Structures are given as C-alpha cells and as structure tokens.
Length: 385
Ligand SMILES: NC(=O)c1ccc[n+]([C@@H]2O[C@H](COP(=O)([O-])OP(=O)(O)OC[C@H]3O[C@@H](n4cnc5c(N)ncnc54)[C@H](O)[C@@H]3O)[C@@H](O)[C@H]2O)c1
Image (cartoon, rainbow, N blue to C red):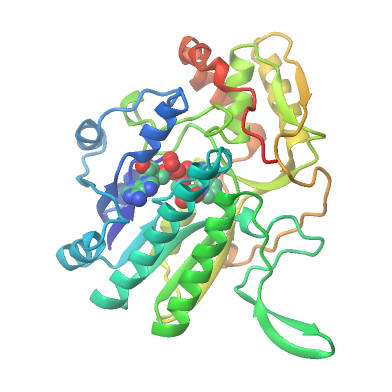
C-alpha cells in the first residue's frame, strides 16, 4: 500500500515509517520538525541524539534497505496536503502531526492557542484535502485515551452510545472530557473527523491510544535508527521519565497519590497495531474507533516496577517521591476501557511493561551523561491552575 505519514519525524512516526517500509509498503512522510524545536525551546532534547531527516533516510536505506520519502512541510499550510495527495495518490493517510504535550499546552495562553490552532487546523486541512482530491482514502488518526477522561462507567469503543435522557432514548456521541488543552484538541479532532464522515462519507479509523513506552522495535537495529525519547516534565511520558530518573539516581516523580490509572502500550506493539489497522481498513464510509492499549496500571504501580527493575540491575537504591500534583485530575478512580477491534483483527501484544523496563534501562545507561544534562527539566514546573 501507499501510505502518507504525517508526523514522520516523531517518536511514533519514525518507527512506524520503518515498520511499514520494511513490510513492503511505500512511505511518504511529512513533518515540519516542530517537536524538535519545541523541545529545544523548553531547554531539553531527545535523550537519543536525532540524526537530520536526510541522515535518517540514509540510515534506513543502509540498515534495512528501504526507501522513505521524507518531505519537510507544515500540514496546516493551505494547499500542501491537497498537492501531496494529488501527487502521490496514497491508499491511507496516517495523521500523527500534532502538538502532543499536555503540559506544553498548559504553559500559558499562547501555548494553549498554538496547540488548538496547530492540531485543529491540521485536521481541518486533512478532511478537506481528502474530500476534494479522493474521498476513498482511509484516514488513520491518532487520538488519545485521554479524550475519554476517567469516567465512572466502563469506556466504550465506539463513537456513539444509546442513552436515555429525561425518559427519552437516542444515540449520542460517547461522552468525552479532556484533561488539558491538548486533550481537548484531540476531542475536537474527533468531532471534526466524525462530522466529515457524516457529511461526505470519509472512511476514518480514530485511534484512542494510551501512553507509549519503550526504546526498541524490530526495525531499530542500530543506534542511528533510534526514535526520539523525551524525559522532561513537558515531553516525557511517565514510564520513559521514570526509567531515565532511575538511571541518574533521581527520585521517581509521582504526582499526588499516584492512583491515576491508564492503559499503556509498548512502542513495538503501538506501531504494529497501527500497521494492522492500515492493512485492514473499515468498510468504505465507516467511522471506526479503536481503543489501543495493552495493560492497565496506576502510576504508583509503574513507579514500583521501575524501582524493582532498577535495583535488580544494580542502579542502587531508587527513591519514589510523591510531589504535589501540578495537574487537575482524579488521583483515584474507576478505569475499565473496552477493547475489541484490535483483538478481532488478531492483534496480541508482544511486550509487557515488566519485561520491557529492564531493556529500557539498558538502552538508557550509555546516555547517562546526556540525561544528567536535562536533569533540571524533570521536576514539574507547569501547573494546571
Ligand atoms: N507518544 C505517546 O505516548 C502518545 C500516546 C497517545 C497518543 N499520541 C499521539 O500520537 C501522535 C504521535 O505522537 P508522538 O509521540 O510521535 O509525538 P511527536 O511530537 O514525537 O510526533 C509528532 C510529529 O508531528 C510533527 N508535527 C506537529 N505539527 C505539525 C504540523 N503542523 N505539520 C507537520 N508536522 C507537524 C512534529 O514535528 C513531530 O515530529 C500525536 O498525535 C500524539 O498526540 C502519542
């Protein structure tokens, strides 16, 4: 298949590009390198130094014998997506190209406005480009489990549910409740995609994914192939941050009670699942919601797992500190999301968090000095209130 991958330079985009290309798909990637710039702006960087786009493409050719077309461009610019779709005629478009840090979106008014603008305009440009040039293209959009919030009911895997309000029944959109401006931008994305599906019959897979962790995929066969790995308060997701903290002897930074519970998935399983969804599109004109995670844990349980693994590999005594929670969120809550689409396609997670953490520590150890350089960026500074 021919895949246009928006956000190819990102933590998930690059390993997905490698996996798709290695499987024989043609990959045309687009990225404006904004995550690199925003991380520098926050005074931090990926722990694994990132090669330039041209070097990435060369290394992929050298180690995997694949050709990836890497185009620098901003998808919010008028005309860009239409031109690319006309030129390359993709079967599927994967949309990862968004500002993806919740804390970054909460820094101040300008960061909040930027997040909403970048994410919403990109999605609007995408639906109009597909509608105008080829409405049969399968849109694969990466949302987040965070769109649902933490409701006191089991989270469905659907766009609509049956509801009864004041004695009358109807189908309504599944209730969503973002926990930051970033998460709300994802909720609005879903609204845009769903409306485009209803208006024009666009075919959409809307993936609700939990936090991703890990350093390895089957295609990352050399240091130069590594994807970005962030560890600071704005860009580091929880498992990645805890592992880096353990490597430099920094206490693990649990926010509040640490009862916040989420569905996690390894990098390898995340990109494998997206590949499967691309290869098995829904029927034309259908809107498919996919809840994408492998295991459910609380932050407290993760801290315990990282502490045990770090002490086992000889990193010394690891402390766990409970910090005042900078976020506005429930610290103890019900959490039971449904998951049926990926299993129905034969997807079985191949990694567990417990097994993967020791590999992450092993991969991070050679970069200890570089992690030390970003130490100041670890404690939370961005507050929600
Ligand atoms: N990493 C996770 O744990 C996780 C979990 C759930 C959902 N997601 C979602 O998955 C997607 C990919 O996440 P990631 O971790 O790879 O993030 P990332 O920031 O590493 O990658 C996103 C890429 O998109 C690019 N980009 C942003 N705006 C752009 C624009 N206007 N034009 C062109 N390129 C643009 C960035 O430069 C970056 O390379 C995001 O939409 C994110 O919200 C990620």
